[in-house]
Length: 103
View 1 (tube, rainbow, N blue to C red):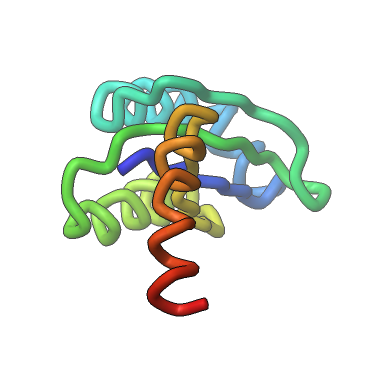
View 2 (cartoon, rainbow, N blue to C red):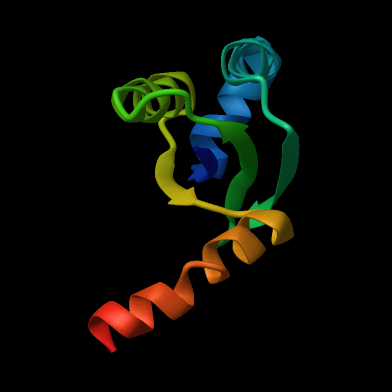
C-alpha cells in the first residue's frame, strides 16, 4: 500500500545533528530502506520536516518506519495511506455496489 510519512523534528536538536553530519546519513539510510517514490523537505510547525511517499509492503512495517524516524531524528511522525488518481478511479468503481449493499 502506498503510504505517506509526514515528519518534523526540533530545530535545536536538528542543529547539532546537522553539525555532526548525522542528518545526511539518516536521510541516506531512510532512502535506502524505504525507497520512496517522492520525498519533499520543508518547514513544518516552525521545525524541520518533510514527507516521503513509499510502498509499504506489509503492515508490520509500521513499527519499523516510525522507529526509524524516532531514533534517527527524534521526529514526530504520521503515517497516512495515499492514492494516485488511478487508485481513486479504481476505488470509485466499487461505489455502486457499496450503495446497493449499504446505501
